[in-house]
Length: 239
Figure 1 (spheres, rainbow, N blue to C red):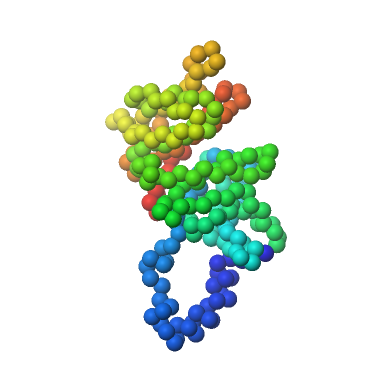
Figure 2 (tube, rainbow, N blue to C red):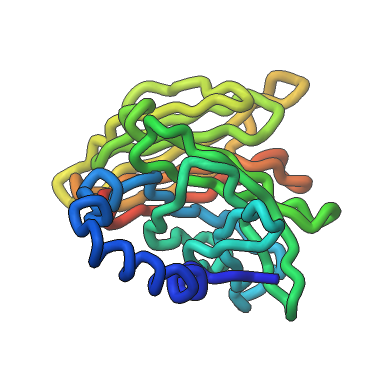
């Protein structure tokens, strides 16, 4: 059974109201209490369903009664970034609802000291789940005007954003300041070396950037060319 926050509140509200009449001071919610938990948003590389149809999912946790308590709905499409959703610092699941049952497609836990986190979801079509990668922007100093490169492949990547070429190793999270030209553009070059030490280019594009947004550059395995790059721009980074 799935229980929404509004449903839970409707059940406990009469008791809270009665208690507040006898002791108002004890029932008032402090600003700190209203801000419990962390804000999270999701970067979706590709939804499990594929195509243009959105994958309508929900962020929820299991209660002690083994029921789902919801915190917000999300719609996942290829190369999309969701709005911010506040969740508690507990195990949270990305669930797909269906009748009285819901299926978890992945889970995560935001550490209490992390105010905002970004979750990168990568689909696993064989197991029909999402791989959830938690990014702490504050820890990485990933701010507006910067790009975050994450290498999800098993081979080192050569990354150049118009400055020096950086080797981003498998599993590495690399942040770099974006330097644009007078038109607000910069050139992104990505390549790797094959077994014969030959440089194989896989991404060469001019991208726009400014000091009000930040970019995700996600490097993924590709059966044809060995590596592919997905570029996403994030707006409203502090909402």
